[in-house]
Image (cartoon, rainbow, N blue to C red; front, side, top):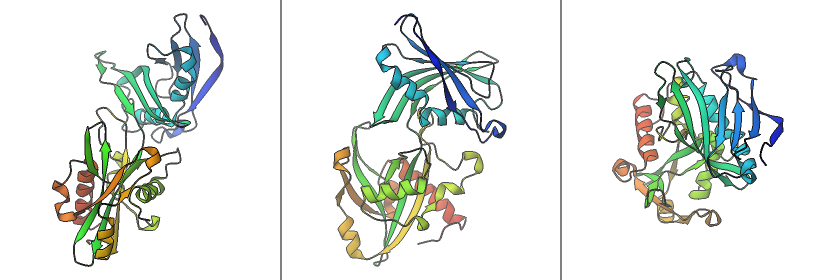
Length: 303
């Protein structure tokens, strides 16, 4: 395979709201295999048209894995990361930094689509020549829902899920949440679907309140739960419902989830007044902060 060169040119669409004049611009990729059998791509991005970016596969990736690396570059995860780099508040927006290289280290497939992507980006400060930390775990957009059930006994309950979370080594109480499964950006639809799958409650789209929509426009109306290492950007919704005490009893401890997908979930209902101290889940604590501030500003009704 030494000296093998792909004759085709690959293109990646890279629209940017901040660079409207380049909304329809495309990133050109020239793909080749070096004599050392490493996989290397060269891409050009709008913010630095005269400085091509090398995108390489990590050591140990064979030629048979070329298609997976190619798919990673063409994935919505990677393209969304590039768009963020060049957005109004992006790292490359003011021209003081430059993207030199991206090293693809891992690709996890969810069926036929890329679910997770891990890579290292070399971004340099032009004045000092120093790199900024650039290890990225890309998983893309996600949603979470704060569901408040107002019981006829006067108590308001938050609906949580109890799930095995292997990365933490613990069973965690958390908000119903999920990743977007496609590139359509249907945050509301995803939130409704995740709640039905995890809790068994059917929500009405028109009654969903996007709490992150109240954030300043500079945030993109999204939350970054762990920006030091992960690109995940999350929308948090509020949904409230009047219920009878019998509904509370039926939901408490209910086993749900898609077992065939490895979801072993129990529903837990917690009085809202106690919620802030009952779990270490960041989604819960963020949703409380958003909800309470929205209440203070009169943006949502008090239940």
